[in-house]
Image 1 (tube, one colour):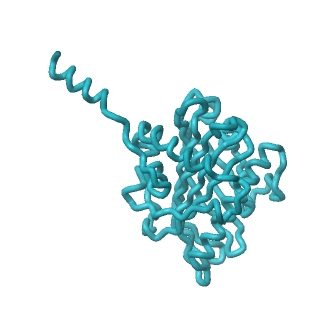
Image 2: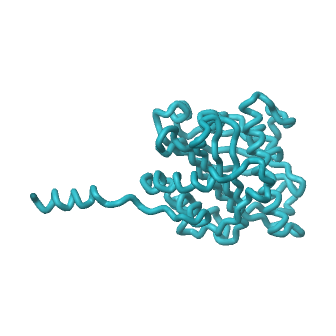
Image 3: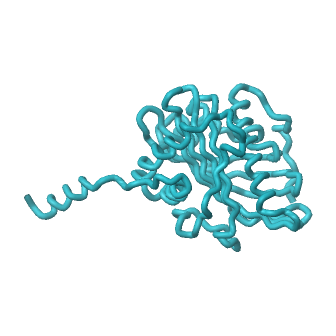
Length: 272
């Protein structure tokens, strides 16, 4: 046996990377490896499934909330840092959920151009554009989708326009592919009145077909973000984020069933 062949066989026998067994560390692992190591993703997603399958969707929101560690620059895995933001100055919030619809419906949700009534109620305009082909991603003939979005949020505390990039990936599992998305704020956003600045936002969304009920989808949604505004504490901000995530979970399930939120999906506000 030649040395080259022997070395090649050694490489082929290397064990797959180990995913962290701690949920907090696992989220950083998945964010970092999203575009770097697909084998790591394939190992990490079943570990995430073990956490999600234990969640009862009837639990209160507070019981399904998870406090995450902050993302450091080395955890971004190729996602860009928001210009001018200090990466570690984040308020990390995550929520676990069980959707009442199969995962294929979630693939279709993400190729909707108009995300109003899929996003939370504060989103009065959310239009997604596609950098790569959404059709092949939805049908499963390609495993990666890149998108950009222009978003208008009208919150109780402030109103914002901002732009967001989100990449989606299919991760092969036994049975249905998992759906994983990773997003980031393209630039800091200042509110209409100038009283608040949305400095940064990084997002990880993991959706996995329920192993015991193909009609349901397990879901993890985490956001690492920061807002600067007088009178808005980190505790208040994290509560607003958590409630917004929960609302988006419910809106998405309602949308699949043909029930739309009260926001006008046809309204196009003027962006100055």
